[in-house]
Image 1 (cartoon, rainbow, N blue to C red):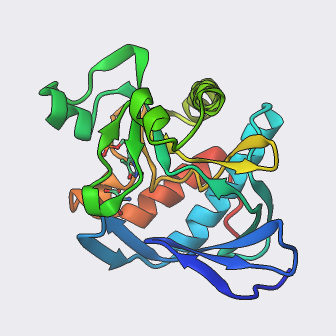
Image 2: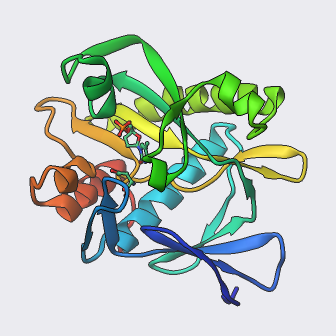
Length: 237
Ligand code: TMP
Ligand code: ASP
């Protein structure tokens, strides 16, 4: 499958059309951004590692019954996906406190959350992805009631599947962000699942193995992503 033209270029991925109107190619770049694009850097190998980790996780989710846009790996940095009509909302589940919830609610980092908590954010960098609730989604018609219900159900199902997958690899799934889109009459998981969009801590030491290494200038960002890939059994060759 060959790329035709660039449809969209995000902060870490570019999206290309293909000869098939129902398929797109995702190109995972080495660009790394944080704080809504305020801090950016090129991290060598990150695009390749994320492309392969994403392929592994999306395939695992499909096998567990979660419908996703993922079709197949095409090359080190490219994957073929179904073309979705994206819903401009981010679904976040948190199993342990970290990041924005600590700032917003004044709670300490590293509190286990039982039950896990769920938040919606509007995907809008200029507005710094504000937190929204279901009433905003309905009133502004970003998604319908049925779609909201499906996004919530699938986001929690992903939690059960991936918490177990990561724990087997000695990793805690602290939190993560998912995006969904419409494909004909179905809602599918879109975008990506990589250490760029979740928090992963070593289960014993609670060392950070995700993009917080970059956000907080801890160093060794790509090495940590590779460690996650190796522990999961992802083929990086
Ligand atoms: P937060 O703590 O900044 O709200 O983020 C929660 C989780 O969701 C964290 O793993 C990062 C991820 N996330 C993104 O990847 N992109 C986003 O735009 C947002 C709001 C969260
Ligand atoms: N992904 C967003 C950005 O690049 C938010 C973040 O990860 O901090 O700005």
